[in-house]
Length: 142
Length: 142
DNA sequence: GTTGAAAATAGGAATATTCCTATTTAGGGG
DNA sequence: CCCCTAAATAGGAATATTCCTATTTTCAAC
Image (tube, rainbow over all chains, first blue to last red):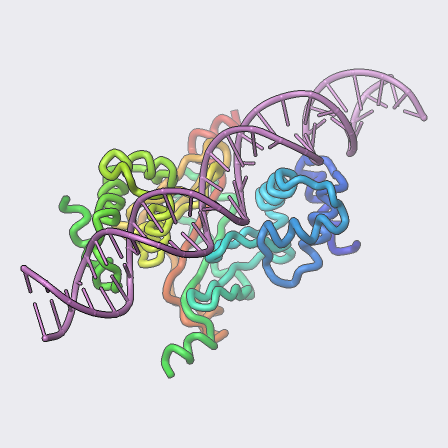
């Protein structure tokens, strides 16, 4: 598993121990090209670790999101998770629920100035866009 | 209830009916000066409407968030809701969990250009900042 | 390799959230 | 004011998520 190699390093650097469960969860996330729900991950992870508990999965998704190794995206029908390999943001279609990843990041010092004025130390940010995707937009207009 | 008057108009304009439950939920949100959890709202709403179901509360929080009358903010320990009287964004402290409202909005056409390039029709956006608030920042450094 | 402390896990209990459906209600039209 | 239809609700079932605790595991020091 190459993909997860550097991710595992981040985990250890953040002071978390490397367990079999974590390794499998990360590998499983890596295998999915689209953001997946906790339950979808659970079913997949159980193939390799039949005795893993739901608690362990949820706890680790929380950890991975906390150290920014994974992204948590709000979509109708439950949150979804994906490995955060490159920093980016998302667009969620309000009609079909599809999630699109956006290239680049439009958040710079300008966008954080108000927080800085208030003496807040901004370490992370997350921008969620929503509306209609190309397909749904046309259906709506047509 | 003055606060909720215009909000109720938005609800009706969006095609939703005005029910007693919705009125109470909106009034209850208006009474809270800080973002509250669904369960906190449930307990408060039940004082006026003892027989309201959890389903009705959750369904309406979803509706209110959808038509942007309420904001849904992710905080450890569950999502929180607040009336969205003026468009703004939030900062969440990773240590104490406190939520700060930020004045103004730093998202403009520039920040949406990538989405527009991809033929996505952006109707809404949400920016979440996180890090350390003034208090926790000092504790950490001290 | 062995040992010990702290962190992590499994499993089940407790909560929270969502789903389903029969019944009720809001609001427009007559 | 009465009727009608679509939308909304209550209540309970089904899921999903979190909490708790005894036991296991990681990993650093020896």
